[in-house]
Image (cartoon, rainbow, N blue to C red; front, side, top):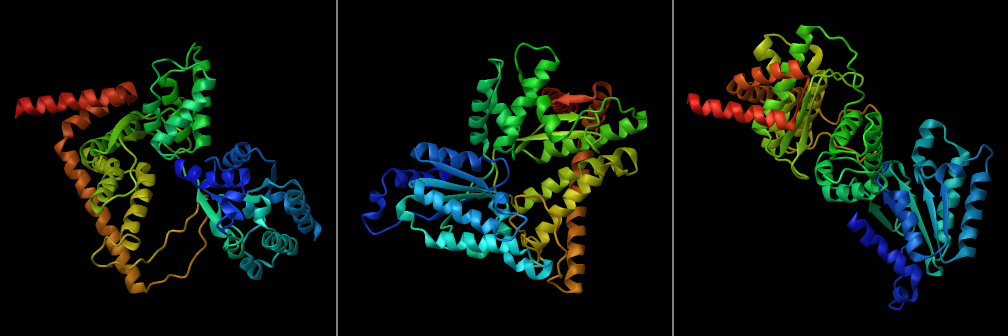
Length: 448
């Protein structure tokens, strides 16, 4: 989080030497809001700032302000700010500020909560009334910025918002290096490889991953934590608990093997930015009867239209393999269809990738860091446009399916061999898939 640390280093410098900032008439920010997904280190960063600045650190959780009796929360806010003024210079940190700073417009619809309203009102008044030149900096953290009251976010209260996002590959490597100091790791362990396998993991997820890997090593009575322990831990976190005891019909097993080889093959031929790391037909978690883990070769932040279509083709690869080799479809592709439909719909309604619909943004994605059920909304477009959207989404999905079928038709022999290997071994590692692929390419050259 290099950029976030640069932004917050000024606060440390201000607390150490306030005159440096005020000599030209400027002032330090009154408040800094740390925003980001859960587990990315917002609270840790706030504590680190206080440690660096060598000043007292007052910490309170937003929920601690809320009391049963009206007026107690507001009194607690007054006491806290008075305490901060007495201890200045210091840092006052309010964690999970969304518990007390929720937008007040909802009170009309929900009947309101007088205690919460008074507490928030007192917080706003206190933030307005104190002088940051005295050396009191307010830090707050939230993973739900979209529900905070606009009065709290205006300039003069929380002057700055600093995004603390999930780490990139380099950040994940640095976090893994910190946590791996506490375990007996194999000297051959490649943390770079593990960092590449964990896109989207937060700092807390990575700490949990290292712990799970150590527990796997203990279960097998190992002396050191190896890379295979980390592989097992990643699968445990991403796909769920292995369920080898689940007895499967041979025909079902065969269908799942072809389904997963369909995903793997389309990914191998169309997705050069991702490597197939593992293919398995061992059931995991609540609903996964098999899974294909793909490993990105680099961090990506943008996708063009062709890449999105390829991604849809990879998602529909399993369904395409069932149609091509088993001449029927099953319920196994349900999750793939949901993801592919969401992607196709986003292309049409949000990214302007449909000629028929044009560049109009018809559905906006809200910045939410916590998965929450979306409230039903009044549709911003006509029924005719809705029909056009449905038609375009269907057209993109059919295009993705055709692309997947074309690739699978080209590599029929490879899929059949891979499915047989999967039924025999249940899991194919990256090396097994590459070896099978190389053999197929060589035999194709010889026959040509």
